Length: 354
Image (cartoon, rainbow, N blue to C red; front, top):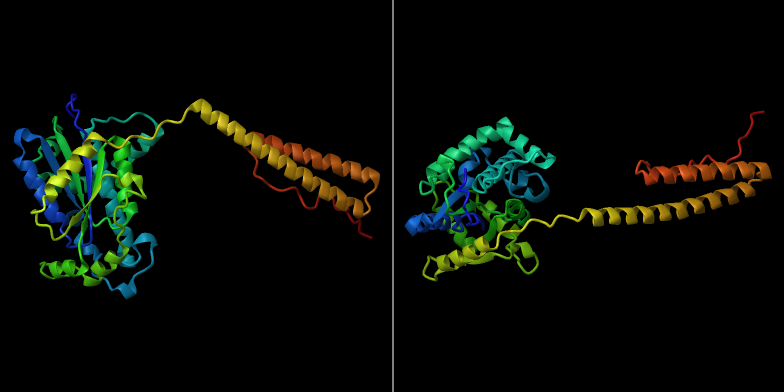
């Protein structure tokens, strides 16, 4: 349970960049810095996708020629692995959400939205993965005992998400999470030349396919705060910066700003204004529908007259069409209408068999 007097906002820090750009190195530097902080002021929880998604999914070694086009992930993952890859990514986000709840000391209200989230946490797939996530993260981040003890002390917590995050939509999922729980949100994009990444990758013990790096570099969407205001707290780091240019100082400064300016929830819509708007829309829709139906009736009556209908037949037809119009509008008013058009057979003379 969180400290009731906690007033330091947690921060979701999203790292993004192509493979071998230096994201994990930056994460490790952040953890070393937090351990040097006096009075236990900052805890960093490092959430590394590479350590949580099973390597046997073979996500980054399949031939590009054999890959299936699939929404955003078409050129990076084999078709056989896409579903599993998405599944694990979803589980990781759910785990981060659980941590956010624990830090913020949030309990569920008995409303529909929270029941959905709560039921998600009861699924066996999540519970099994949460155990792995919990053990992996708690063991790796010994500087933060809060996760293992489930006692979130009065200190700043940085949830450092380490992944390629090459699509903006991937990062936006975490922004929505920050908005939901009132967290600070920031992004760190590590800009790295492809050749540098390829060289670093070749020196790894288990390098990934070079085509994956090249392809991802062409698809990567860097933060663009001018175009997307939710990316306001973003910074770009040079992959070749070894710390001499005070990148850590700049990063910590931005982190402090993000903590002081957590993402605000969307304002609740005024119920009276919402009802007035709904009523106005319904009135406008009914007026348009009535005008359209009257025109249809006029056309059908003109056609019936041209087909030689008698006055009595014309009177009966007019009564039937107007009754249908009123019935349709009544259903529309109660929002029960299936928006079915008038029967085209209405207004046609029946031909008696000889």
